[in-house]
Image 1: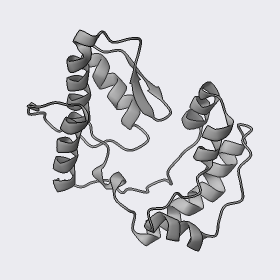
Image 2: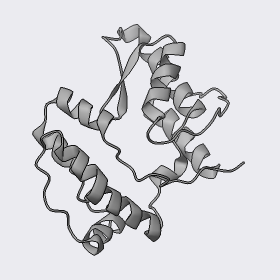
Image 3: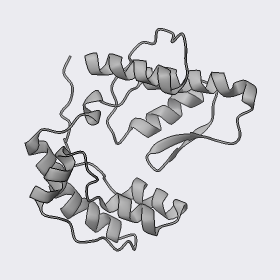
Length: 173
């Protein structure tokens, strides 16, 4: 909960919400469902949005006088349906190894299926040293972003699993 409360405070800063309203935490979302849930929530708050590269964008142009309302809607949705706060933390070694294996054996193969030339992955030890050293890590999705159009990249994000299954166990009450 401490991580969640920190994230809520950060959301208020990001969206320039000076006096953030109380928002009930409905539930934590998985990384795979987060963007879809945010789009649905924004729609319920009066703003048409869509998923874009795993993130969320508002459809069309927002008039300047609506800017504050959009920011407040993003804050409300982010606070009500936040991503699992653990996703912003470094993974324990066993789970980081699980993620590396997934990237090499599942994600890279899937991304290649969309015509992306994926470079040879580094060794697990090299990948882990970059991951824990806050250095850029080898990631087939980054290579897809360099080689594909926005529309093609959207298909990759929709069709390929970025995270290993059960990377983040369910949060118990």
